[in-house]
Image (cartoon, rainbow, N blue to C red):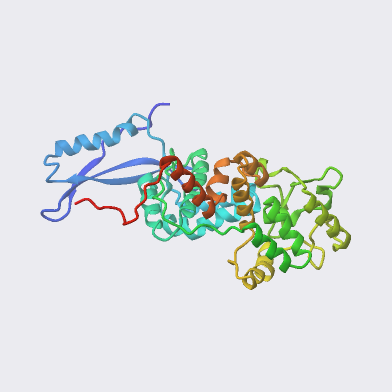
Length: 388
C-alpha cells in the first residue's frame, strides 16, 4: 500500500538563554478510541542547542524520526488511554474467565494499575515505565503481589496488541525486584491438625479433615456433591468450584482430578453422610438452609476462633494445602505426586508457593552434611586458636 503523503516536519528553538532546546513537530496517523484513523500533531524535544549546535544536525535527527512514517513502515498509534482500554477489556474479555480470576484481575487493576496508568495513552506505556513502577512497588509489597501486577498488565496488553492498539507488550522483559525476606507461611504439623479436629464439631470436623488430608481448595470443598464420591471404589472427583454465589469449573485442566479416599476419610465421610443435612443441591457440606457455605465466613466464625483458642496462628484454608505439600515433601514423595494431589498446573507452583521447609529437616540435613565433610570433628577443649 502506497504512503498517503510525505512530510518534512518543522523545527524550532524553545526555552530560555542557556536552556534552549530543539523541538521537532510533525503529524502522524493515530487510531482514535472509536477505531477510526485520524491525524494529530506530535512534538518531541530533540536535545539542547548546546549539544546540537546547527539546524542541519537537528534536521538530520528529525529526518530519522520521520523516515519510518514517510516510508509507510510506522503503524498508526492508539490515542486510547489505559483507563478507557481497561474498561473495554473488562467488558469484553474478563467475562470469559472464571469468577475468581475475573475478580482477581479487577482488584489488581483497581488497586495498582489504574491509579498509575489511567491517563497514559496505551502507546506511551513502555517497558522502562513499568519497570520503574514495579521497583517502587517493591518497597511496600511482597514479590507475589508484584508478580500478579505484571501478569495482569501483560494479559491486558496481549488483548491490546491483538486488537491493533499497540505493537508490543511493555510487560515483557520486565525483571521483578529482588525478593525481600518474608516470614515462612503458616503450615500445621500432624499433631496440630489432630488438636484442631478434636476442638471442632461436625460438620466442620469432617470438612477440615478432608482439607487437611487431600489439600483441596476451599472452593472445591464447598462445591463437593455426593455424586462426586464413589464409596465402592474409594475415590472422589473434583468437578466444580463454588465462588461468591456461583458454581464454576475447576481452576484449570489439572485441577479437575480424581483423589483416592484413605480408610480414615472413607469412614469419616460414611458417618457424615448418615447424619448430614439434606440439600436439594446434593451438597456434601450444606449450610443450615441447604446452600453452600461461604469459605470466608467459615474462616471468621469457625476456623479463627478455634485456632485462637488452641494458641495457633490464625490463618485460612490455604494453610491446609501448604501443610499437605510440606508433609508429602517430608515423606520424600515425588513433586509430581504433590502436584497431582493439589491440582497444580505447574510443579514449580507446588515447590515455590506451597512446600515449606521444616526446621527439624534442615537440622537433620546439616548434621548429615557435617558428618560427610568432617568425619573426624576436631575438638576445641580450650576453644579454637585465633591466628594473629
